[in-house]
View (cartoon, rainbow, N blue to C red):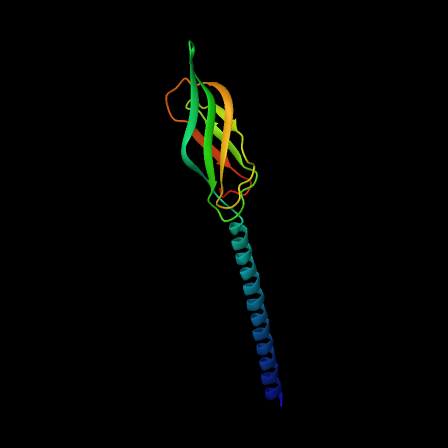
Length: 139
């Protein structure tokens, strides 16, 4: 009778451990699966902006040198969600920056024009670069 009680006790203990392990596995897989789907959902909300074509600049020659008077660039939202909080700057070869104005948001796969009237000295040779960002752009 003592041996049967010990075997039944061990069997009961073994079943409890198996049940606890099963619960642990189920809860862990549920939590991991939820985090993974949350991460996918968050990344699906991000987008990218791309420059279309060349930056257009209008220059004026003065006795003291060349000056940039206007800048224009076209951007495209290449993501499947709307880009919001868009900020665009033109970077001149000497490092000076000009804030460009245009739509603060672009729908998915939509294009927008960003421009500025400026009067910046254009002293160095080189290209005008564009730096764009948005509140939900991929980093």
